[in-house]
Amino acid sequence: MLSMFGSEEHHFTLHYNPLLFNEGTQVLGEAWTHNHAIRLEDKKDGRITLWWNGIRFNEFVVGEDGVYRTQVADNWQDRIVSTLDGYLLTLPDQSTYQFSLQG
Image (cartoon, rainbow, N blue to C red; front, side):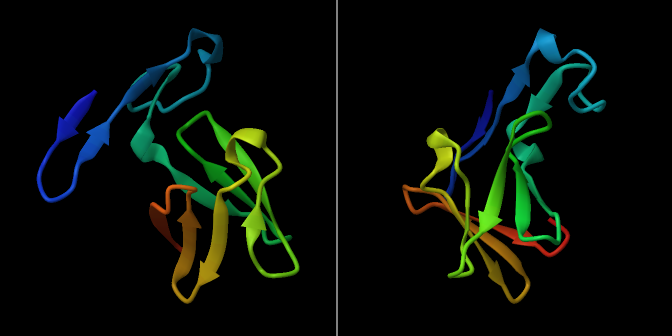
């Protein structure tokens, strides 16, 4: 892990999973991914796929209140809402991630 400290901490963590040898980012090599590969994919049917890295994802479904939620137990408190310029992911510890309309 590479960490940078300043007014904010930033961590770059590599993940390797030999069971996913044909997947992952080609930049790092087969079966390798990293925590900065997080992105959203709007399915345009009321579902959003949140990619935590190149190989791990959760599906979120929009509710009647306009908030996207997942049924996955580990992430059931995570929330995604649409904003004027994209999406906002809020985690249980109130940390947030802002995504553009392109994800």
